[in-house]
Amino acid sequence: MSFQINKKPFGKHALFQLIDNDSQSSVWIIPSCGAMLNNFQIKKDNVFIDLINGYKSGDDLDENVSMNFKGVILSPFANRVNKASYDFNNSNYVLDKVWKDKDYAIHGYLYNQVFEVVSEVINDDEATLILKNKYDGKMPGFPFSFDTTVVYTLHKNNQLSCETKIQNSSEQIMPLSFGWHPLFFNDVNIDDVELQFPAEYKIGVTEDFIPDGKKIAYNAFNSLRKIDDTFFDYCFKLREGEGESESAMVAIIEPLNKIKIELHIETGLNKFRHLQIYIPPQRNTIALEPMTSWPDAFNNKNDLIVLQPEETVAMSYEIKISLL
Image (tube, rainbow, N blue to C red; front, side, top):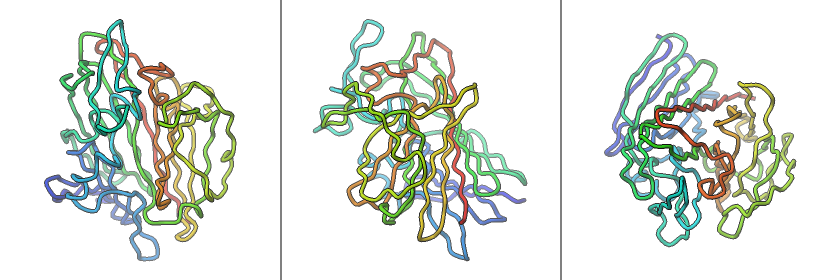
């Protein structure tokens, strides 16, 4: 069989490896903590290279996931909710704050929650891991129950797809702002990395990175160019094509190992219309975060998804690796 799935301990967690035996590339998933994408490892010139900045051990994960949210699902809200409070359907809700000293809630409630492994499928063309979480509506400020299904598939030629389906299982309408939080490259000089993404505009923010309502024209990275010392902790509206199955392509090239990563993001109504880009102060990694909505969408309502009871939405992205 060209593909296989291995399971091994990762501290108190279980790590699932989706492996392409021909190329020896592998994807590492940790279902018990936010359906986490913890690594995408490839082999080049007989050397294994980690392309995702993940956690090195179970202890590392447990101690730091609530600080840096590496590779996890962001739901039922992505990014910040100002004052940890919002109004919806004539009611006010107050959310729990992960960072107690901040004046906002951040990154939802599923980032550290357990996803059940529903199915493992392997054949000569791909390896697929299907995960599911049932949120019961008991966390502060979000009394709406919903089911989340995540499908990871490793394909030939170093390609990974991730599809997410969310169904409102409550008896009332519910708001949703959704995203993922993968970080790419590990201990590289990000200033030397080339970046390209199709932005329609940059969302203006306050000093707490809460949107201020401004839409700032932005085309600095419409074509590949070095990041240099560019500061990134901003959300961008992706430029979308026409039609029902359009996508936006984000590309980064790491020059030392001559590796190109393409992130193909499904765009359109109730899909990933935005991209959050973050480079930490160490400038050794880069987060490229597909998002359905603006930050603080529970308050500003920009591209906020509203699901009717039993309604389902689905969105996906793909990672494609090329050796240059």
